[in-house]
Length: 239
Length: 320
Image (cartoon, rainbow over all chains, first blue to last red; front, top):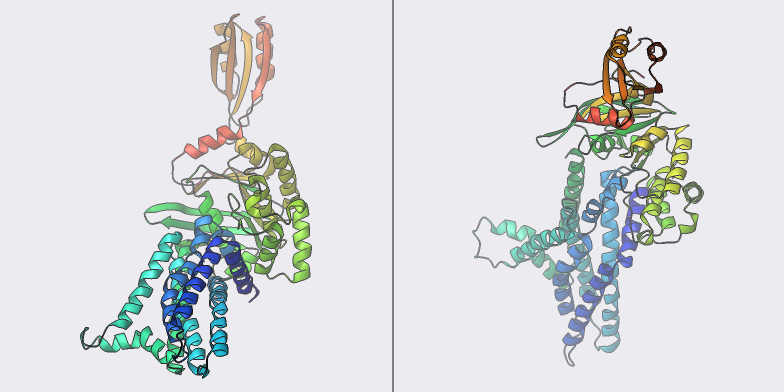
């Protein structure tokens, strides 16, 4: 377990040593802060619903920006060679890389915890803590899934740009699929759309509902993407 | 030790390796030579576990490189060509990271890191960012990283890449010292370096081993010896006498510029008597002035170019 942890530590620290990490964090915080300030209105019930809705969309460009370099950069610079000839398995490398990116994603989201604190201190009546807690669980779960999609794609290419774009479009597709209204797709497709709908699950979380099936959906989907990343990395040994 | 049995590898339609076999014992330093695209890098990448062979097997210290990959990799210290490193990390943090990958405990990592830095003479660079180092220092950081976990097998791809002459000398003596107690493969394009370092040389071309033996056995490779004399004249009688000597296969006279001197090249078969005493006596008998008489040694470069150009199937094994 020491190997994956070492990889996660290095990956996490490198995000703070590179401009891309700071730019991603600054843009996310700037945009979410703007939404938070603009949506506070006197006389209105205190809520972070708009903040969570916008943050969930912002994860679409943020997560690929974190994941794009995880494995593609190793292949581009040749550092994959000393890494993959160390005793750490491919699974260990994928877990370590993902964990490093995931911890950085938490660091991007964590400063926004100041918004509920501010809201709590200035509003009367106080906001309901349930939707706030569920909102953060939803953000982390969505971010985890997007990051796992990005990790899998990053394992398939040595181009960061390609990794970014190829991650962005599946996430966009997943979100658009979730937004399809009933009746716009054939009846037999509707259950599939409902099953993979991220928006419906995010709506439940926004209401303060932490449904176990939603959590399982995100965890299983994340696991599948990491398995795909492992398979992509292993297939490189056979090329 | 390293045991390679009939490894084959193709990239699509391109056959990179077509059945390569060799063994390297502890205490041996094997120089791996070959032109670009010969299959040298593919061989190294299969040995180190970076690539999986299509067929054949590799054993590192008794551990199969595919089925027991993790244990095999733990026993190898590998310096890839051009030493890829993370530019944003400091030297000491990079070595600490590599120590963690090999499962070294904290105290062991510190001790091994300090020892590796001292061996590669990079202690002064410990806190410097790798991206700010010269190519030579980066190469030495890569070498320190390969030595860190004290592996019994070392695979070094172009170890003197980017080093200045004094660093090359230091690295060469370090590699020689390390090779005494380890199994080592050094791949290099610098032939004099391989000549000085390796106790055995393997030449790969066209995905096959073209020669495998000690330097002297490679230089004797064709089984023939060449002798050169510089004689004034000489007349046909002298050349006829030399041709008549036992074991002489060919005699060629090349006129030299000015003074009527000629260069006589004599090719003698393997195991035949040294023709030089008789060449000298015949010159004296015919009263021909003789100003030079020597055996011409083939260079590794000549042998390498000859083998690398050979485009024929099968293996030319040169006895050690």
